[in-house]
Image 1 (cartoon, helix red, strand yellow):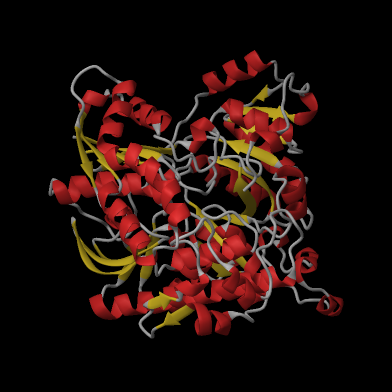
Image 2 (cartoon, rainbow, N blue to C red):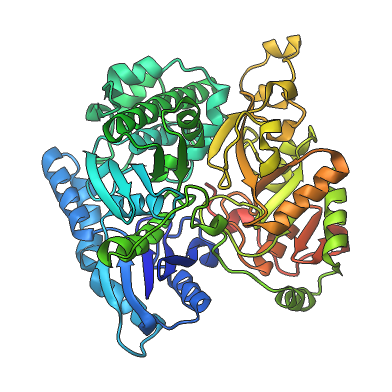
Amino acid sequence: MYILGVSAFYHDSAACLVKDGEIIAAAQEERFTRKKHDASFPENAVRYCLDAGGIRLSDLTYIVFYDKPLLKFERLLETYLSFAPKGLRSFLMSMPVWLKEKLFQKTLLLQEFKEIDSAGPTPTILFSEHHESHAASAFFPSPYQNAAVLCLDGVGEWATSSAWMGKGNRLEPLWEMPFPHSLGLLYSAITYHTGFKVNSGEYKVMGLAPYGEPKYVQTIYDHLMDLKEDGTFRLNMEYFDYCTGLAMTNRRFDQLFGAPPREPETPLTQLQMDMARSVQEVTEEVMSRLSRTLHRETGAEYLCMAGGVALNCVGNGRILREGPFKGIWIQPAAGDAGGAIGAALATWYQYEGKPRAASNREDAMKGSYLGPEFSDTQVEEFLNHQGAGYIRLDDEELFDQVAAEMAAGKVIGWFQGRMEFGPRALGGRSIIGDARNTQMQAVMNLKIKFRESFRPFAPSVLRENVSEYFEMDVDSPYMLLVAPVVQSRCLPMPAEANKLWGIDLLNVPRSDIPAVTHIDYSARVQTVHEDTNPRYHRLLKTFEALTGCAVIVNTSFNVRGEPIVCTPEDAYRCFMRTEMDLLVLGNHLVYKVDQKPLETDADWRKEFVLD
């Protein structure tokens, strides 16, 4: 039985194909359209999934949409009525879209699928609830036969947070917190006020937090949030505008923090750093309290998580370190894109009642390498058509040469195998470098990624060596856990560094792997596993044999505002627009010095909307 899950029309549209409970393929629409967070119907992602399964649309038993539009419309109407007459402008702007398109989503979906394949009958279309899709994406692919499930995001239909108990092939809802009281929207409000883009820049706030002081934590508790001991809370809506207006916050919020929102692209000040640190600490506290409550109520040994807030890897790391769960598993595509997986799996297990067995060891995500892949023949055809200079090597020579180039300080575009599903590059579409290099972070941020200098980079480390570098000894294949660097590798702060503040602290090396050590001596860890990505694992083994270091820098293969690259053409274009030294496409090495300039190349800053 084939089931297609679809997420669309809000942000991060995606599609996922499941065959008899096995995830066959999954991809976000943005990777094909090159429009970051593309919310349109995922036509290209659907076509890819069908092709990957070798099937036609009529071979599907079900198409499942990841939420219920009528419930969401009900929430919008009730919210506008509750706050009337405030919000009239927002109401008048949103209603035409709903009345024309979103309210009749089943008809719209049928039309879109007919455009893809009009031969044969269109499969039955089902609708899952938003948080059920999140919960299913967290539990059903997890390694656990039984687990508590915590979903935290901005808002679905009504729920902003929800708790579930997963047992075998069933998910039982336990409780939920309703809109407008949302941890995700509180974090987004601070994201907006600090000058970053909502639904895109939240991870920047997390990265900025260590530069600040938690001076506004009590301000948040006193004025913005009434937090209970069990982790539930209510927000004081007098400070927020997202229910009735076109912005996240209002003038009263500005007065509370003594300034209006920062204009995007203007210099960051200590205010933004302190706000980021404060909301991060509040978020971690809420996450910790909710997880303890869920453990107390269920007695479960394991916890699964999804929803956009579950991408807060600092909070996830704290839950893991402080307990009380024996282990946690987070859906790698924890945001709305992952809802496509959850919708499909919820149909297989809950609607169809199919049995499920888990080992408490391996998950069912296949390393999240679920996207398109390209053969060496396809790569060579592209390079020849492009007129690019390249060298083709066998595996042994390839890994030796790439490891040597990394050790020599080169920045490398690494394009191998299937594209990753979710927001993280995991060694399929990555930019990599030497973690020991004290200049690597600055070079990658300013000359490769063209992004804010404070942004940290993640380490890829051999799973078998992780505890030699970081204070953790668990699997973290999806880069969703932050852990401290082991004390023996840390360097003391020099006396003169005490005079520095904020961004100036970035240039002070903190360990013998400085390119991946954040200013608070932490790192967002990706463990690399031979069974899910043997080529990336082999590269790290080769680098370790050469240098004695089992860690490299890994960041996503894109520039700021661009989705992660999908095709060899995307990769080559990004490579040529940056100061990367070497591009590795399968077994092909492409050196920058051997390339001629692109014949037609618009400024990428005009092509992509900066996030």
